Amino acid sequence: MDNYLLLSPSLELERLSARLEFAKTLFLGRDFVIVSGTLKDILIKTKEAKKKKLMVICRCNDEKILRFVLEKVPIDAILGAEDIFRKDSLHYPKSGLDHILSKIAFEQGKAVGFSFSALLHATDKGKLLNRMKFNLKLCRKYKLQVIFSNFSTAQAEIRSAKDLEAVLRVLNKGK
Image (cartoon, rainbow, N blue to C red; front, top):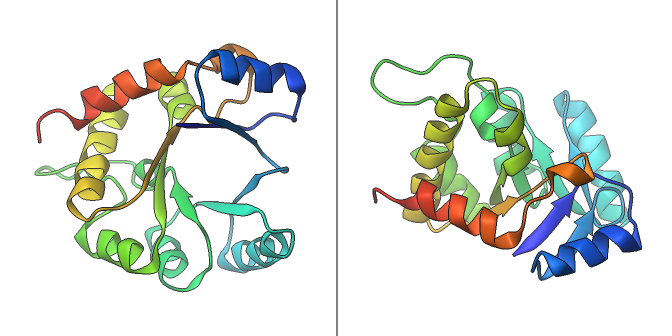
């Protein structure tokens, strides 16, 4: 499991990640970038990042942008699909992903990212956990690659690989 950090690269954080049993530590700006905003902003930032040979993770805030990004933009992963909708449907959680988007993501070779930091800071943890569980079920069904990592903005938020694997196991229960 890799540790994605939204922090400045440092040897101390790399050593901490190694002690916490992560295979590799990736830093924002050095190894990957997170793009968001309007479609034009996403396209420009993605093009710049690809020139620098960085991994591109897209955080979409609209379902139309999410679909366009999955179909046509050369990103590597999406992050935070659970935050697109404010309210759930009466019959199912509106988790941002559905069977159509999952199929498109598989065909285009895109991964789906989940942030433990978002879970730490969520005001309604139950709703977020339910949406993550629903998205993980779709990822499993359509054989999508999953990135479950810290995405921490502070050193105190970093959890071990075993802790993240335990959360992932709990979310994957109830197949």
